[in-house]
Length: 120
Image (cartoon, rainbow, N blue to C red; front, side, top):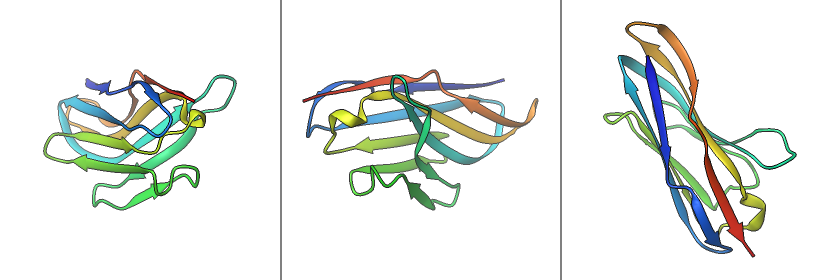
């Protein structure tokens, strides 16, 4: 089995910052893509940021210049540093991790989600 544990969400005023973390554990042999998605009430889940094992990143246009995704391959952890937060960033944020585990083969798992609320 592979477990994902997210942390770091909360309530912040507009203009503030938060840092999300997502740690993967289990019989993991390798992790490829590590992504952050978000889902606001009444909206579809959308990709916020993605990072490959080699560190290549991709961002949604709405967060470019404000959010930074990074990863620690030794700790199987992905981070999302969110600066200059806006009320439109309010959503539940989910990490998605794809890789290979010794006991289950390839996997594609979602974190439990963490609420980010930005007040105006």
